Every structure is written in structure tokens, then in C-alpha cells.
Length: 437
Image (cartoon, rainbow, N blue to C red):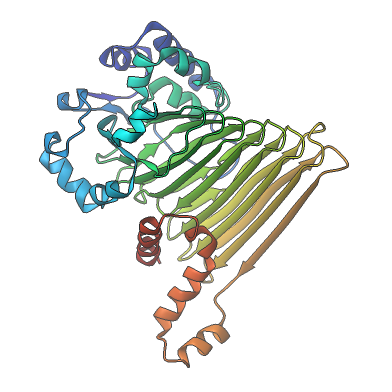
């Protein structure tokens, strides 16, 4: 089944294919009406998308069942995912979900996590098996009328993960989802909803790739995360979309008292990326961190950053942004920190560093920092640098080749980001950086 273009009848067809309840179809149609009315973003790079040519849904009949055994998945798909390292990375995870085009095709989780009552499944399965839990949080943290692409996702979402970690539960191994676009003009619109209940802890890892075609593809995901009292969630992602993909994502977390949310966000590929992970620090003494890296090469615009909204008292946030621009690429930090009038004794720190590797590349820092009380503070620091001839000469005088010296300087520049990743992902990141530079 393949659906090209968007209208109400095609949205109904997606809903019918998924055998959804009436409330889900109503949400989809409401989102579609908002999508049609909302304008494209007035800031950032131009996203020249012909919405009439996008494939909004594509799946084989075999995809109707989510497999838990790789031997039951189509062999060409398994071989493709194996070449990308997906099967190998599963060995280090507590659970794995894989989405291919529009549907989740594979899912597994360790038995010990099932015994702890942890739920890790696709959003469609969750809507059928845990409807009241999904209704409580779905569309509440990210509203379907706040931007055009959130509305589009609400209309045509397919696939994505649902995670529920019960109270007083700590996961020792990460859960992982992997998203693959494999068709020309394909749109992928996964919807991820994560709930980490009180006194619990989760690390979730996301990976994304697509092959290169002349026609552009669209990735417009929505991620909603609720972090309960005294809980912690870390969301790590390294996306390596091909340079024909528009990567336009809305990610937001709501953090309760003494909770901690950490976004570790890597953007290596895509034609255009607009992504600003957000923490709404609703609870008193809650914490938010966002560490990002963006690499912009030829014909790439990486418009990334973070948003920290302080509502509770004694809240803390930390943003660290690392950007690399080369061969005419444009790497922009766009961020927002808001400390509300009632968020007394709150602190925010923002540090943006950019490494420009040639004379034709570009980088901008566009912060919006607002503090509405007298006993809180926001610190912002930004640096732009190049690889100096002196550093290269020093390293080359020690017998290191120029290419290797540049690699070492670049890897040192992004060390803060790399050290937050699991070892196997840090090694993969090194290879991705080298291939893109």
C-alpha cells in the first residue's frame, strides 16, 4: 500500500489500514485542518517541499505483523539493516525496535524488563493495548497546532515508539529504535511517546539513515517525553540522513519535581535540519541538559539548538552546542532560554562553539535569552574558531600527517559530545565524522 499526496480521504485510508479507534481518526483530521492553515516557519532555512509529491504511507502486506525474530523478516531488509550495524548494536541494548518506511517491522525486549512491567512497543500497539495511558499524554506536550510539521505529523503519523517505565524502576541497559527511509520522495512521520514514572530511570537511543536519491525525502517526527518526580531520562540520537532529506522534528520533554532530562543530539546528514530539543522544567528543582553536535557540509543547512523553559523554582539548565562547517555548509545555533517570573533561584548556562574549516562556510548563533525575575541568571558564551596553522605545524613536527592532525583536532573539538555516548555509538560517530569531512 502506498499513499502519495495528502487530503482527508487519504488520511482516512491510513487510519482504516491501521484499524484505529474513532478518537485517533478525529485527532488526525483535526491535525490535517491545522496543517492546511498553518504557514511554513518564518525563521531558519527554506524548506522547499512539494507536499503533493510526498509518499505519506508505504508498507508491504508483510509489515502488518511486528516480528520478534530476524529470521521472520524479509531477507533483503535484514541484510540491509545488518550492513548498517543494526543487528550488532542490538546485543548491547535492553530492547530494540526497527521502523522501515512507514511501519515498525521488528521489536524485541529482554525478559527481565517485561518482568519489571516495562512497556516498549510501537505507538499503534500502545494505542490498542494501553489506550487510557496513551490518551493521558499523547498530544499534550506537543500540541498539533504549534507548527506546520507538528500538525502534519499529527495527521499522518505512522510507527514510532511507546515506552512506559513504571515507578521505582531503573533500566541498566538502553532501549533503542532505528528508523530507515529507503524510497524516493518518502516521508517518515514516526510518533514517539515516552513516560518515565516517578523514581525511575531510562536511556533511549535513536538512529536514523537514508540512501541518497535525486528526489528529496521528508522526515517530520514528533517526540513527547514525560519525566516524573525524582526520575531521569536520557535521549541520545545520531542521525545520518542522506543529503536529500528534509529533517524537521519537534522534540519536547516535561520534567516534574527533582526530575532530570538529557538530550544528546547528533546531526551529521540531511539537506536541511531544523531541530531544537526542548525541556519544560515544570517541577521545582528539575534539571535539563542538551548537548548537540551539527556537521554542515556542501549544500547542507544545519539549523539546530535547544530550548529550556524554566517554570519551577530552583531549576537548572545547561546547553552545549558544537558545530562544524565545511565546503560551504551552514551550521546555525538557534536557541531559547526562558526563566519565568515564578522560577526563582534558577540558573541556565549556554555555550556555543563553532569550528569553520574553510573560507566559504558559514555559522551563526541566534540566541533568545529571557529572565523575568531578579534572583535567577543566564550565562551565554559563544566562540568561532578555525584550525590554526600553528596547531597543525606543531602536530606535524611530531610526525603526525596533516590529515591525521586535522582529524585529532576535530575529534577533540567534539569530545564533550562523544563522551556522553555509549562506546559503540562513539566509535560510529568517529567514522561518520571522518566520512563527512
